[in-house]
Amino acid sequence: VESVIFGPEGVLSRLQPGSILVVSSTVAPQTIKRIAGRLQGRDMHLVDAPLTRGEEAAEKGRLLVMAGGDAQVVERCRPVFSAFSDAIHYLGPLGAGQVGKLVNNLILWACMSANFEGLKLGQALGVDPEVLRRALVDSSANNWSLQTRAEEKPVPWAEKDMTIVLKEADLARISLPLCGTVKEVIKGFKIERGLPTPSMPAD
Image (cartoon, rainbow, N blue to C red):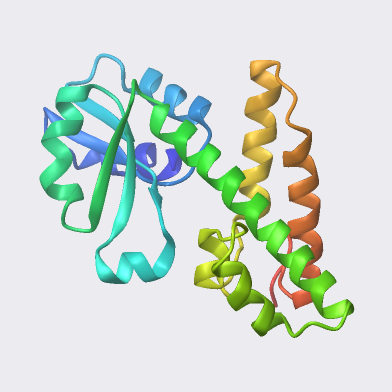
């Protein structure tokens, strides 16, 4: 992200005074603050606005935006955000959007991990996974990743997301033991499916 903004042919070299720079990548809140520091003294505004709901929502223009930054500047971005999203949530000062995205992803990967282990247990005990999935979607165990079969899609960013969450938790001096477990479950899930992990690059 910083290379794209500040590199020799970066975005910064093309922006007009008074421009709004929106970062929609999922990065650490500390990264957003570092970018803001590097932009100090320049006539421009920074907004962090990561996106959720996945590829299918992107194709349908129904992404969800979690935005952080000056409230009035975020409001000016709404017409642009509305071109590809149908839900825009202002979460607070700069970096708040990234905090929201990290919490979203922690809960998403936790659900996916539980789905993976639960369906695996059901199959081992003789219940067809598809029959069980239909029942679970109609039950109190229902969740977005179960409904959308998120585990069937590539998940290259899962471990990166959990690494950021764990680092932010360390900086905040809070314990998130489930997060560490989820990171390992996701890694096992990817290995079992033959998907690349950070220590096993794609061919």
